[in-house]
Image (cartoon, rainbow, N blue to C red; front, side, top):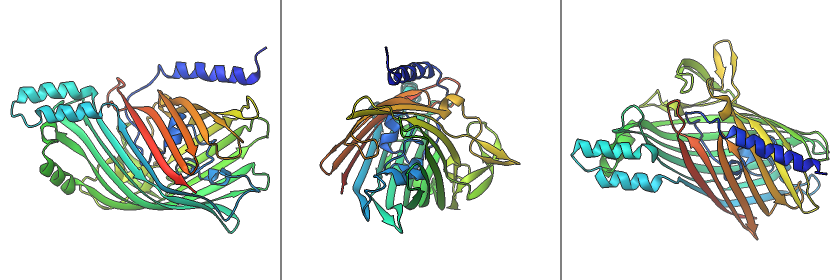
Length: 409
């Protein structure tokens, strides 16, 4: 007779196969992309048990170590580097380089048509941090820098490339609260961020013109800053299989922007969240607001043996709430893009950091895979996932990869 955890695993795999056939178009903006959560489909709201809790659920800051095993300093990660690229970047660069200097309009048009399914995407980030006890409360402090570049041929005009360059420089401080049994946790993270952002359409033939391109980006960029606040809650219902419910509110509404053009509903709305202020060359840019992102998560931890267990998780992200004319979250996001699911196999104690994990999942309708390996003080993380970059009703997958490297003390 099959054990219950085999039934759970089988139903999870079947659900992922069904979900993967339902993807819809349009990419959801992301300001920071941690590696490990992406490997398990982004379903991390009810799992959050390491430094990635900063970006997913602040309540998880209390769950990186055993309640009785905490010391004054729990973890130092440095330099904590993340690099990423999509699989089509090389083809995009080669395609632009081959004909971008041509004066033949026909050649440029042909090249543009070839590059429609070969976008460019790259990201780099550094996030050194320290996790420690402050007044008996598990806390985290760190600084971060994150830059993402993206260019994709416009669906409406193949001779233009929708180009985005966003750089964030900031600092975070967070703390969490937990009961003696460690079953209930709540947390809060405050983030100061200075943002340098460019969002516009550039002629495909101009992408190789280095000085002109730099001048265009410099003149057309928004320079702004904001204070973001994230909140989270975790409740582990019982010890057996550790069923856990998680709730988080990322970009809690510290402000609202009137007349914001919602990229999904295509309507102008009053959108609340982390609102940036500063010098705006392009006030219509999506990055002027990081909308409130309300997330719900459920996870369970079936154990196959004393040394091998799994985390199975299901999340709903970007749940919109409307109060009067104020929108907390973006309406119009397809349900399939709100759904995230993942399973992560790991070795060791479920209440401690694992030296080895491997996971897979579904994020916004696309398959994900990831692994974490710790050898001594070296920590390596890898994940691959897909994003829909189409602005039409026909999905267009962009396959991306992330690699993280840090020294943990």
